[in-house]
Amino acid sequence: MGDRGSAEDSAIEAYGLGKRYRRGWALKDCSFRLPAGRICGLVGPNGAGKTTLMGIAVNLLQPTAGTVRVFGEAPGPGLGAAGRRTAFLAQDKPLFRRFTVAETLRLGRELNPRWDQRTAEDIVRSGDVPLTARVGTLSGGQRTRVAFALAFGRRPDLLLLDEPMSDLDPLVRHELMSVLMAEAAEHGTTVLMSSHMLADLEAVCDYLVVLASGSVRMAGEVDELLSAHTLLTGARTDEGMPADLAARHTVVESRTSGRQFTALVRPDGPVTGDLHADSPSLEEVLLAYLRTPGAPPLISPSAHAGPHPHPHAQHTQEAAA
Ligand SMILES: Nc1ncnc2c1ncn2[C@@H]1O[C@H](COP(=O)(O)OP(=O)(O)OP(=O)(O)O)[C@@H](O)[C@H]1O
Image (cartoon, rainbow, N blue to C red; front, side, top):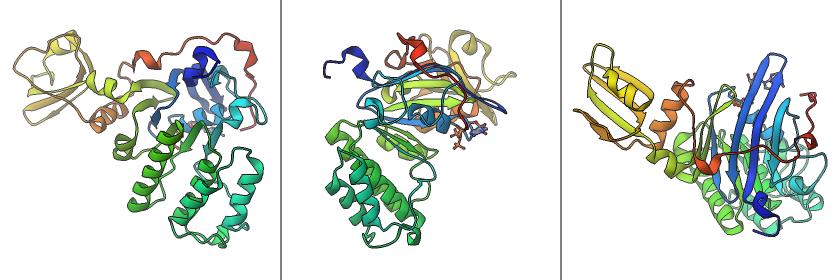
């Protein structure tokens, strides 16, 4: 892609990234790479650091430690190259309430040289949101649609969406997911989307980053992550599951129910014994990691990040958050 060398292949690369607030670390030693062109789900329990990570990537927050690169550049003030290529849809979707929808889109057009009016208007119109309505009179879901239109209209190379679907009804959610996938496929947009709706993520994402307590617990291609895991069921022992299983394989989580145990494992060789082995769904894998923040992390090779060449180019002072 282009003449920018291998850095161009990474949409986001975080290395040793940390953010400390007064109450403690919100992100700690967070390293991962998101290759360009993926639709990536960002998953983690409340307070895991998802919003903080996105805020650092779009230069709204400064890291306390480590570095982040967006298309190979440190996020900087103003509309640097990385900033021009990035759109961020924040959780509270800030819009001017007194503006009409048309005025909101006009502002988007005036502020963005790459503005795509047709895409933005299509997204608004397909939800029957009148262009003449004031933003303050719209329902929460309609406002989300306008915020989506603003984000897509910017024609970003990287779109960061912080829990974009939380106030949408299932039909609108489904429709906007389809818009998201179609736009991303047509323009090669990289998407990083935080969500607690695991089924939605399963439908649209081909890449995943799982955060727990500020650290990356799992990152990589969905297919790779899924195929690394096996769901085992068998007769429970006094300890719950047979002791040799934990000795031979990486156990993410094990649970017992009645006379049975179920364990999600990363097999380190053939699974032997009187056990039933199944392929887990993405939801089963994610739930196991969310329930077990201490599980050994799994970072697939495409998600590995290394140190950046100019670590001092990144600001490291605390921001007024
Ligand atoms: N401005 C702030 N000042 C102090 N602490 C903060 C601030 N913003 C976030 N935190 C803390 O940092 C941690 C991570 O918060 P963050 O909002 O990044 O999590 P999240 O994964 O986006 O959560 P959620 O799923 O609830 O949106 C939390 O413990 C939160 O209380």
